[in-house]
Length: 85
Image 1 (cartoon, one colour):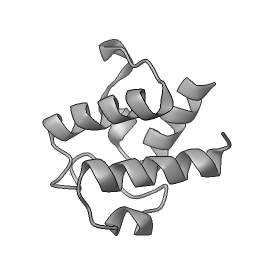
Image 2: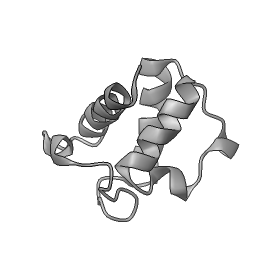
Image 3: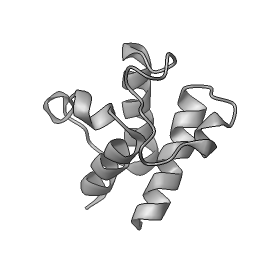
């Protein structure tokens, strides 16, 4: 999966998990997430990680996640891309 495909998948997951009703499709790599989207609270982060694991076959350990991972759409997409190898 190339970077554009990963970004597209991340945007779809954000839209689905956070119930953004299509808003995520207007996001760019620089769009702030954690602290900027009221929908992205601690429970939503867990749901998003679970969705990434289920849909992409990722394994995410608690130690792998920090606030920087969810800082922007780009940082989340880069995290996913790195996990996909």
